[in-house]
Amino acid sequence: MKALVLSAETPSACAVVRSLYAVGFEVTTLAEAWTSPAALSRSCAASRQVGVWKSADLERAVVELAPEVVVPVTEGDLARLAPVRERVELRSRIVAPTPEALDEATEKTFTSKAAEALGIAVPQQWVLGPNDAAPAPFPLIAKPSRSRVLRPDGTVGGGTAAYVADPVALRAAQAEHAALGLDTIVQRPVPGFAILASVLLREDGAPSLVFVHRRNREARPEGGPSACAVSLAPDPRFVEPAVNLARALGVVGVPAQFEFRVDGDRPPVLLDVNPRPWGTLGLALDCGVNFYGLAARHAVGDALPAPPPPYRAGVERHYLPFELRRAWTVCFGEPRPGFAGPWPDKWAAAIEWFFVPTDGLVGKFDDPLPALGDLVRIASRALFPAG
Image (tube, rainbow, N blue to C red; front, top):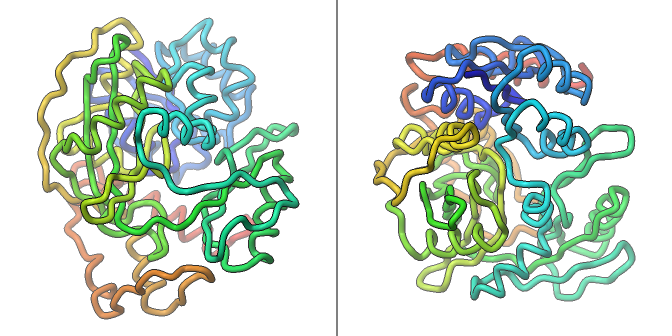
C-alpha cells in the first residue's frame, strides 16, 4: 500500500512517516527542499521536492502515485487541501476529519462553547471585532478565531496566541486578524502547566487509542510548542473530557489532541483542540501508541481496536531547536510585554536541555538523517532569511 504525506518539514511529519512505514505503507512526501527532515527518513521511500505545494502538485501526485491514503500534516496542508479535497477523495482516502468536523474543530469559539456544554472548563474569554475595546484589564491573551485560513491567492495566513500588554498591542493583533477575515479572541491568562490528551475514537464513539503527556519545557518561557515532553499515565481527568469533546465534535476515525492547563487541584482548563498531527506525535509513537498508523489502516478498511492498550509512561523526548531557543531566550532575552509569570533560572536553562540522541523527536540512532536535514534547514533560514 502507498501513502502520500503532504509535508516533510516538521517533527510531526517525521512521526507520521515513521508511523505509516511501521504498518506497511510505502511512503512518499511532498517536500519543500532536499533538507526536509521527513523526506530524509529511512522510512520514506520517495520525496517530491515541490516547495510549498499547490493544488496542481497534489492532484498530479495523487494521479501518478495512486496512494491509498493521503495524510495532511500541518494546518496549512488542511487549508490548501480544502478546495481540491473532493477530487482527491475520488482516488484516495484522506486521513483527516470530515470537512464539517474539521470546520468546527478548528473554530476556537465553537470548540469553547462545545466544551462548556459538556462541563469542561474553558478560559474566560471575549470575541472582539477589529474596533472593539479591551473587555478586561491587561495583560490578556489575544489569538485569532482560527489559526490558519486560505487566502484568495492560494497562500495560507494565520496567527498564534500572544500576550498583549496594552491597547496598542491589542489593536495591532485585531488588525492582523481582521486582515485575514478573522475575529480576535481575548482571554485572561490561565496559570499552571500544559497537559495534553490525544485520542483516536472509533465511529461508535469508543476510544481506540489514548495518550497523555506533559510539556516539561516550551519553546519560549511564555509558552509555545514543546521543547521537552514526558509521557504520563492516562489520567481520566484528561482522557474523559478529551474523548467526550472529540465525540461531540464528530472527530472519529482520526486522531485529535486536546490541550489543557492545570493549576493544582483545580479542574483542567481546555486551551486548544488540534485535529491534525501534533509536534510531539513521535513521543506517543516511541511509547507504543501509533495514532496515524492505525488511522491510516482504518481508512483502508481495518477495524480500530478497543479498549485502548497500555503504553509506557515516564518517557521523555526533546526537540533540539526548541530546547536551544528556550535556553538562549532565558539566558540572553527578556520576557515579552504582558508576560507576568516567573522567569526561569538562567543557570538551569543553560544545562537542562542536554539529552542523549535516542531521546530526540527528529533524529534517531537508526534514522539520523532527519536531524541533519533539520540542522541544515534551520541554519539556512538563519543565514539567508530572505531565501
